[in-house]
Each structure stands twice: as structure tokens, then as C-alpha cells.
Image (tube, rainbow, N blue to C red; front, side, top):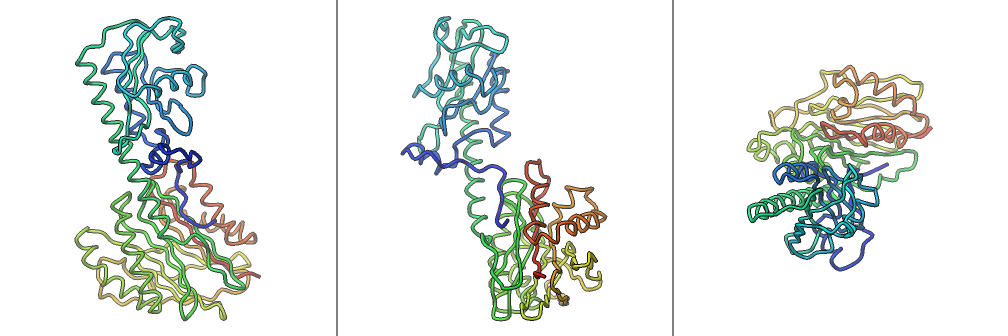
Length: 396
């Protein structure tokens, strides 16, 4: 497994013109953002309705966020979604005929009132509709129309922010390598699960004149802010790593990022090393990271002494960076991870022993099995921090 694994990936199977517009906006469903999910409940309260929902057009009309409505996969919800997205403008029916086919509310009372307003992208592409329903006929005042329009604006704003996050995640994914390096006698694997779609973790690897460079870094900060700093750090570290051996590369990057890190009051922990395939020797620098261990083929776990570690980037750029050397014998592996993985256990340094034991249990299956084991633990959970895991192994 290699790459950035985003919790919410939007489908791309719809090829229609308006669908491409919606896809460009990054919005093919509304259920990926808690801010969107909260709006129907708010609409239900402020408009004193029995139910409210957001129906989206793609990939098929469906109610993606709701309050007081039938289950999203029910026939009633599907019929209501098709009706909601079929109108191009404000649609208010103050007295719905019992045979209009709008379905029932969860209490088996027929829908007798409907008010819906289209939700659009900034380019004007139709995305869906925000609507409220009631079990009784009622008048819908100008003030209530204005409230519905205001809530619709909040839906569009939240969806736009989700779209921006989605596209930022796409950019971030392209900054990290999609395929591991191919080196005879070695296996490489890595994956990153950002906690907010984008994040401050990154990993990298590439060939140099001396061997294979490998980096895992964690920017202090999450979300868009962390991702912006991460993109700059990734580019600078990659350029420095191609030109210099590990200690010099980290020193160069620390100086090059000094202004950015000082102005944003940010620091970056980094583990950056270089493997010489012919000998199995890895020379690396641990700049405040500390989350790395070597698994020997016999099950022994080795960690570098604390005295060999240096401070993160962004604190003292002139601090010397000691290099740590280790040798991978056939069957040995190195595992590096971000502190988000600790949070999947008890959140303390004591978790490292548990992580090492679990990695050792699947060591014989290869580097990819090690990464898969921890990424499977991270996916599907509400993460408090980005989770990144890298492993490389010398084959037996």
C-alpha cells in the first residue's frame, strides 16, 4: 500500500456536462461534511417543520443529509429526493394533495407541505436542493422564504469549503509518491491517512547518486495550514536530499525554511535517511521525530539512543545534525510513523513497544503487510491527528 488515503473520495462515474461541472467543484455528495449534515436539523427548528433535508443530484438523486425524514435508503426518501431536485427554482406547495406522491413522514403521516430551494455551485451548476416538509398544510411567509434562502447559502458555503478541501487533498496526494522505488533485494511501502482530508504529515522517497533517500515528516498543525507548510517543506527537503547526504540535507532545509517556520510559529519533526542498497546501510537524521525502530529478522527491536537525536526544524537552525547509521541484514526492516499512530493506542510513548510487537508479528509477510496492518486500524475512525506509516525491508 502506497499513497495518501483520503477518508472521503468522490465518485467520478457520471460523465454528463453538468456532472463534470459538479465534479470540478468537488461536490457529488453532501454526506462528507458535518457542517452540511447539521443544516437540516437547524432548518427543522427555525422553520418549525416536521422534516428537512438536502437532496443531491449525483451520482443519483438521494437525500444525503436529513432530520425528521424517512431512512435515506427507503423508497419514500428516494421519491422525495427525485421531487426535490426536479425544480430549477424556489418551489413552495402550501397544501400538498394527498395523492401527490411525496410520501410519508416517519410517523406515517402524509407530507402535506413542501418548500424547497435549489443548491448551486459558484458557477451556477445545479447540485441539489434544500427542502423542508410538514404533515399539515401551512402558509409560508416571506420571512420564512428568506430564512430558507439564508440556510441554502450556508449549505453552498459549506459545500464550497468541502470542495476546496477536496482539491487541496488532490494536490497533496500528488506531492507524495504513488509508487515505491524498485530496488533489487528490498521492499518499500508507505501510506498516509490525513485526519481532515489534508494534513501536515508527508513521506517521500527517491533515488540519489548515493542510493535511495527516504523521508517522513510531521508539520506541527493540521488541515489546510499544515498542508501549506508541508508542501513547501516537501519540495525543499526533496531538493536538498538529492544534492546532499542526510545531515547536510536537514541543515540546508532548516535554514531554507527558517522564515516560513518562524512567521507561522511552526516546527517540523523529520526522519530523513538514505539507504545504500549494496551494503544495507542506512544513514539517517532524527530531527525531533523519535518514532522509528528497526525489526531484526529474529524479532529483536532496536531503537536509536536519545543522544543521537536532534531538535525539530524551526527551533535552532544552526544546531549540528548527527547522523545515525544502521545496517539492515536480510530479513530486517525499518518502520517509521507519525505520532497520529500513537493516538490509535494509548497516546503515549509506551505505545511504541506495542506497535513494534504488532509490526514484528507480520514482519515475515513483508513491508506492505506492516503498513497495511496499521492503516487498516486508522481507516474508518474519527482521527484526531494524521496517521502516516512507512516501512522498508531487506528481503531474506
